Amino acid sequence: MVKEENMNNYKFSNSISEENKLLYKDKISKSIEYLKNNLYEYGPGLKNSTLSYVVTKIESQSSNILRIYFEFKEEKNIKSKSGLEYIDIDNNDVIQVRRIINKPKENFPWPIFTLAIISLLIAAIFVSYRVYWMDTDGDNLYLAGRSLWVRSDEPVKQEFITYIGNDVNGNEQYWAISPAKQENNLIFVKLSLINYGSGTVKIVIDEDASTLYDDKSIQYKPINPIERTYSSEKSDNYLVNGFIPLWGPVQLDPQEQVTGMMIFEIPKSSVAEQLKWDAGDLIMFAY
Image: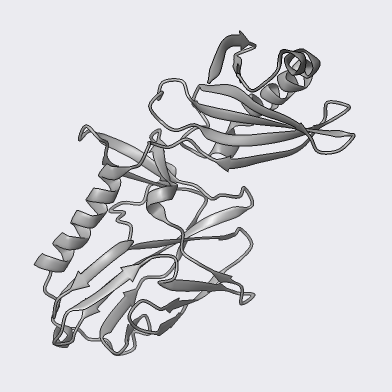
């Protein structure tokens, strides 16, 4: 429960005692000021938004550090789940650490998930892909496994990913995916999976479906685009046209294909060098 008490545009949950409200009032105000002056860390969907804050927990980390937890969300999007972050502030009211644990999002982006599944099914049902029609000479990004051919585009690195889809009311909406850590970027790889065999292939595309290797041979697993998607303001700088997440269960009948994007989060200084495909086949791409 949140107590309807507003001080400098923030509220307290009922778990915060009156004593702590008064004792830490200045530190909370300093923290709120810092958050509102650093909205860019929320990503393109929130950096220009008006946010409301609720102080949910206050705890001492040491004799010199106080940790204050804040729930936050867009004032105009009251139906979304709140994001959560915390500030570590010292005895001199200097911010030492700010960590965003999660960002506001719809209760669950069922329209996006449904659109992704429908797009995969349509691609699988209506796109007949005859392997013998394709010339693969010299194409080291079009490789065969035991039952699948997989075609990979070059990885694309971006600070954020935005794309256009429909909301719960069928209205066109911008959506976004952001790195969980400020020091990271996102990489998306467009993949096409083709069943050239005589039998049906069933695979599940999840965190174990592939592995990305950077120039230091560090491994990264794909992120779940359904869980990480949130509504966004218009942001054409990061717009990925035709974005379809490659995620979830897929069934490919003979001579059918499906195409979509897999997303990874890696440090800004890293370079993608290899991708290993593990779902149904073992295929290695070198970029």
